[in-house]
Image (cartoon, rainbow, N blue to C red; front, side, top):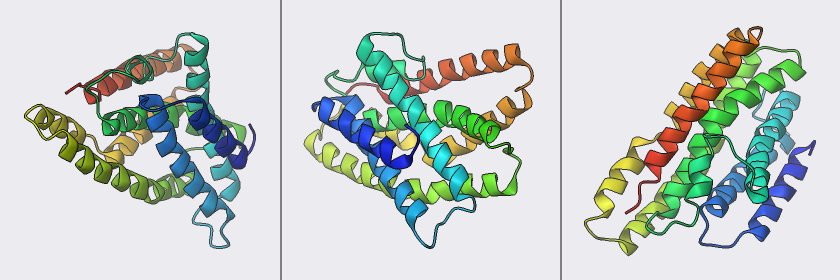
Amino acid sequence: MKTVPEVIERLREINAETRSPDGVRTFNRVYLTVTERVLEGLESPDCPYEDREFMAQLDVDFAKLWIDAYEAARRGDRVAKAWAPLFEQRRRRGILPIQHALAGMNAHIEHDLPLAVIQTCAARRTTPRSRKVRADYASVNRVLAGPEAEIRQSFLTDIQKHADRHVGPVVHVVSAWNIDKARDLAWVSIEALWALRRFRFLADRYTSALSDTVGMTSRYLLTPL
């Protein structure tokens, strides 16, 4: 995959390959919506991004990390610890769709996004310290705001279907996760990995620890009813 339309085509194929109830499919549908909105911005005459080419490549590099995780799980191969909880509990009863969606967003934003930004910056010979890179990173928050609001609205519907004493703790868990804070934390990881890029051993250690930490948060988000 080299273009955003190709990414969207593969995400649609994943939707077709999976069947509900499936937490992996739940997250993929959310991610497809976000990617379609990114493409709308890239193709708009009033493109909201300062560096259209950078954002297009970042979107592809970012998506590949999710798709690679999906393909690895489908083959029965080991996936990154950041992604393991979603795949392990994709069909577990007692977990609401909102939990699967947020666990996927947590893994993709806090683990995959830093790796993708570093990869794209290196490929395009720029740096996270560039004003354009930082501005475009911030602008994606607006793209994500709509789908996240829709996800949380769907949670209210699920609450009505599961209106019992077991839902309370899940409400607390879901409310505790915030996409803006997740992207702020991801930016800290971007800065750390960029500083460590010439020290391969330390960068690998940091990436491994990041995957472990993100995976723990996802397991918390997937607390069953």
